[in-house]
Image (cartoon, rainbow, N blue to C red; front, side, top):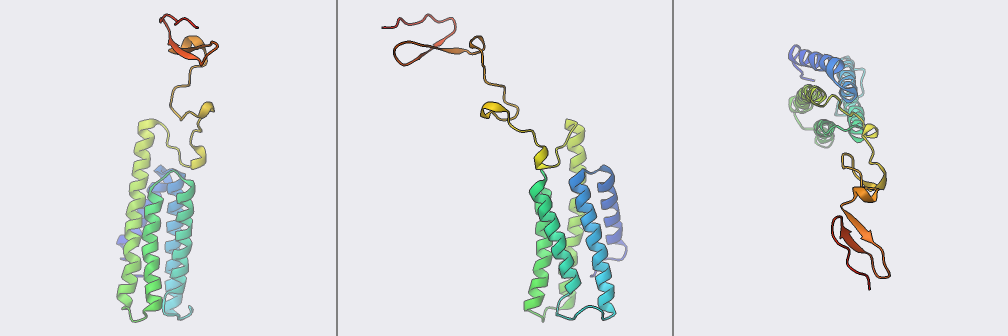
Length: 198
């Protein structure tokens, strides 16, 4: 893969270290997945250079690595409260589309094929940095940052949403009380004279 031998490793190292130290669990999972995928791609590239990988018109090892990375980030998007995993999954999906295009159109230039895959790797690293920065901003502002969908506060009883004041239960708490009678109950506000019942 035509990653720059200095720029990309430096960006990846900074992003993964920043996510590991300052990020939440989703950012750390993404950092581990991206570091593992990059290491796997590097190993596959070395094996392919030595002729130890099958020649199927595409980088088979890199394709499988991108697929595993894509599945991991999609799973992260499903269980976390973050929006950015969907963006990252879209970036990895674009890289996967390059493998699929090379499979059906073998005449694609190798440089264009590799560049299509490597291009999205830089954006994924940058997205991880921004995601970690935003996590820290939310945590510093609110004192907490829910990471997983299962950790979100659940609505309480009576169907009210989180943060909405509870419905009044006592008659004295309600601005309107119902006056019972032989007919349909008539709402009567506190301090208002009750209408005579026929």
